[in-house]
Length: 365
Image 1 (cartoon, one colour):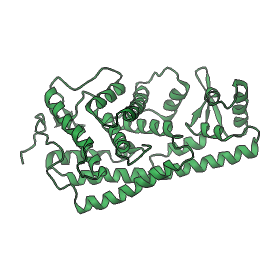
Image 2 (tube, rainbow, N blue to C red):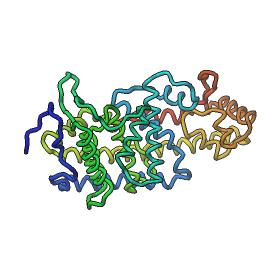
Image 3 (tube, one colour):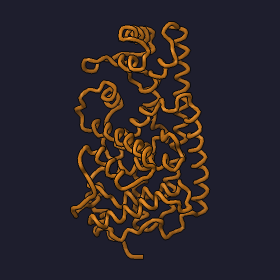
Image 4 (cartoon, rainbow, N blue to C red):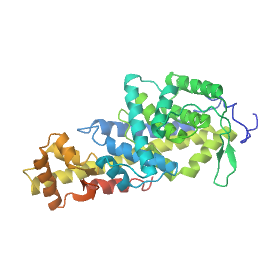
């Protein structure tokens, strides 16, 4: 094995699949439990009366978590208010989180017309994240450093070399090579991060690819999962495991980390879904009892799409005209079911039941 030098471009990055035992007993055992948890989440999502109901909320939370991995920090209040009020976003971090969410939706839409993960799709995603015309790195000198400023990794250099490695990755992802998809997801994630094809946005693009692969492989029909929050909670370990593959070819520990990420976030997702559906039932009961004349299933669903809503959301869903839905929201606030705030010239209404569940999203993962 050639000794790895972090200061030299890793142009010798081996292609996939790796020449290593990636189906050890520990890995296969963990693959079973991770697959079981993911299947439970998939089944629960598909059995919801409206499986797409929570997608905006889930993707905004994933965007927030993924951006936090890169130390791009915004608050739930800033995020939801900016998204729902459609106000001009001033804070750079909030802009970047919203761009991530848009890039994830873009990726999912692209998969509908072309169910393959390609280099071109990766480029479209990073361009959406960065809101520019970024493409494959062409200038040398890219290095990754730790908190002390020490170079810990130098990715492959040269556009031709990077594109060849991406071509191998693309082939590996889209061909049936007999590997369990959950093992493949770990391999493809390492490889993309090791290639580091863009000047910026590699981490966020790589985490979007995880969600797209879950969808493309049929493991999660509705990729409603916060994978990034696990990485936030175990960030140092994440980078240690990545380096372990690069420096010591320790695939087993990295694959086990990724499988645990899938398992734990699936179980947490199930718990969160149960809490949200319970909160919906509770609000349904409250409105039926307190305000029976305004109750409708559509009304409750709109109030649970996002923790913030506004009059126009109800109008757009044909709940009533401007005056009617305005009276509905006033009545809901008077009964303490919602709470209003002013954001610019708009009045937004907060569903505290939903917001509380989301604020606790990272507990004990």
